[in-house]
Image 1 (cartoon, rainbow, N blue to C red):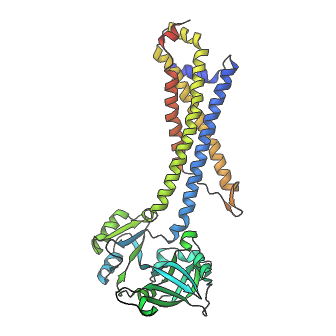
Image 2 (cartoon, rainbow, N blue to C red):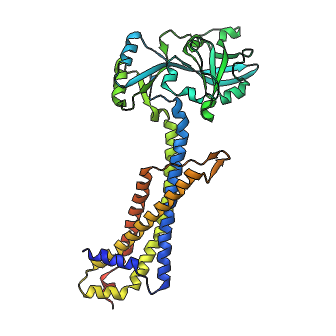
Image 3 (tube, rainbow, N blue to C red):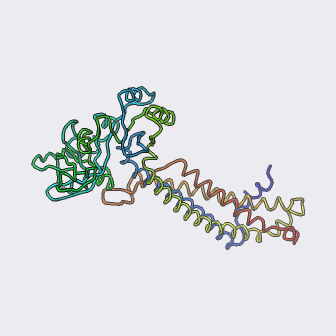
Length: 401
């Protein structure tokens, strides 16, 4: 039997004759419980916010996206097309063309990005699922699909054939400009749908057929700015990336979904880390109560410790008693805190206790790693606090009767 652990358990279960010490011990355990619960709730809240933020962008994000590292565009010939389709793990891919444009309609102007896509695009992404008004566009037509923000800015609804939307880009070249036609390439289009993803993307993209984008930018038939891939669920992304580079050339970069949302991930991870550190600081403050509680217990059990020493217990054994007592307090408090935090998060998930807007509850998500993070944090801090408190025991202390 582990003698120090046995005594530590007895001390945890028994009450002190001094009510003040009992009160301090309860305060210390409650502080740990509340700290652990708060940390778990905050981590679950940020996990939910992260999932909510990426939920909609992932709708139009491909599994892999290929872009050139030299210039804005590259060419894809028929032989390369066949080789890409033959890659194991590739379900399909879409050619796309992206460029900044000015969209104009009846005196209203809006800067945006045209995204010319081919007939495979709605097989790569779930674009059809985010069009509440109108329909997806047809290829080889001057049809476009606008985001909510762009639609409002241009006062353009769907299928208004009396209202054209002009897309314009500057013409490359040098020399004096004497007319608008010499300065700009333009195409007239009709809006047939409105997509709704999030505020940023609703204000960014104008979807068009790849033929319309080529006409506007004077691109060659095989000239594109990117390729977007849909993969099987068990596909080896790294192996497919290497094969794509082998086929197309090394002057391209292949990004997965995480890399496409790199800025969002960095922002969310930075905020998550900052909040974690703040609540860890709260836990550290709470664990000062554990140190105080153990020190008070040492003073209260001074005569008992002398007896233990006199019957053969070493100073190390006596230190371990209170070291284990501190660890038990933090582990029990951390476990109770996790249970309370889990219940609160489940209540929010099931009953929408806190709302961001009248129709949008604050998102939460329960991830196993958050349980591990909280218990690991509590355990490490508990070990440090217990070690500090137990080190107060010296041979002179236990020898004194």
